[in-house]
Image (cartoon, rainbow, N blue to C red):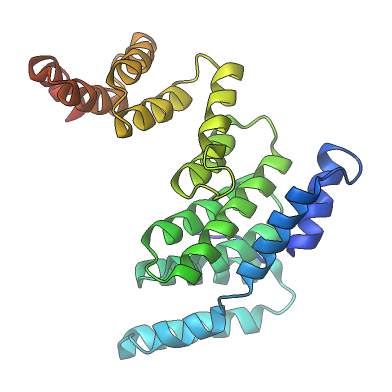
Length: 260
């Protein structure tokens, strides 16, 4: 699944500023948010999570885990072998119910490879963790790592709209208390910059459906379908929108496309 160790938040903040501005121009408010994020990172011990999760494994799974962890130790300075072992550990923990640990090893690979795709995988894994975690500290830990991963991926591939959508969705699903519109504002900006991007339109339509803005959602989805008539996501969402509006016959007309 994977990718390597997370960059310390302070270092990431400096790198981000250098990449985009050439100097530190962050506002005091932004620095306060990053400091808060750093503290939240410290609320969860991956070693403690690993210990707790391993207690629920059966004997064959414990043996597999021991083998994979030994592979990391044996690899030492062989990055290729170590990253392969991290990938297997990431997959192992995802399959055994811990997207947090899966994201942890995905992050290790990302730091080692230093490419946008690896950080995107780590970000997606941590986002899944944030959505599924029941413990508040683990949820906070995972969404903060997801955001950091996508921010780093964007710094490495600044023209990738999909990465920016994923970052926006982190803020949509986990809105900051001081600015709950952050994610929506990011999506609207992406739409202004990319008016024909179907993925952005679909996400804005999805939010419209969630807030009962049926007509706006339908208009966005019809725009998508004008360019991509067989878009399953657009068909499913427009069916929901028409259903929410009470136009069941219109909703039914998109059923076949939705179920394809």
